[in-house]
Image (cartoon, rainbow, N blue to C red; front, side, top):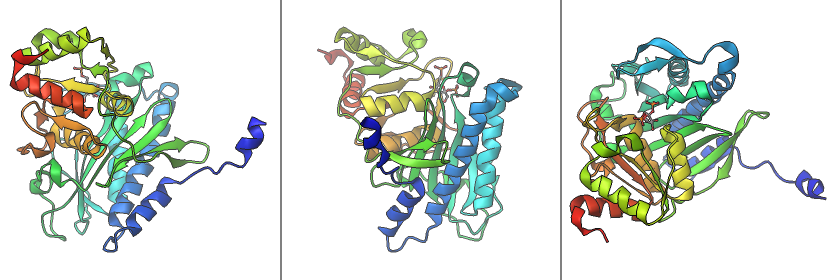
Length: 337
Ligand code: FDP
């Protein structure tokens, strides 16, 4: 009976159709941003395939050296970086890329492209070897330098509030692409047998409040006092901790279930660990589009003035009520009740 009911169910809206529909809502849209999103989705499918095969064809494990951030580079970091760059070079819409894996701006050779893309091709990649979810994060700006010229660092240092689109791909038990062009946020689940992303989570809204907090507990004694006080306080309220150590997965869970993700400054990374351009800005853009909040402890993340492309930042992000309570605690630490 159940099977009969399921037989006639439509498979749903593909990412491609969704992008096309969203584009037609803007009479001035030229389709270039739509094409850019499709290019990113295509690279995501390829990376998804490679992640799924990693353990079988020897793609798991480290390269044996560090990347520009001084962090151990995994083989799949390198592969994902190549796949996304290739997709953007071939697509033609992006004139330049900033990647976590490369020190300098990458020029695509498409100087007539209107957009620049900042990205972390494979976030949380130290989790690959143990079959834990990882992700890709991307952030898109309309360039400020004249079309036809070579992009410059100014195209990337516009500030998070200038992003025209942002998103992530979560390679998890199922693979999902979640993105926003500034009119809310939607999630698409990959159907591997059809090779398509289908709309599965329309208009995601971050729960106003939550009972989960996410941070690396090992650093607790080094967290700023107010942050320690806040965590102590919510523990006493019976809140629970969840930390995968793979930011896209941690954020995705909190976005759907309600919660707060905290990566404060610690002595090892006094400016915070996470990268402003390709981790904090895009995730803050998405979470705000879902009615959540993101702060660096002093101000809204999207209002932080960027100074250099690989800049780091503290990050407190998630359900509005939780981020607001933390911010109040940081401003008046002694007033917790
Ligand atoms: P990774 O270094 O494995 O790429 O952005 C970096 C990141 O992972 C996040 O995905 C993750 O949440 C965080 O670092 C983990 O850092 P800690 O090991 O310091 O907890």
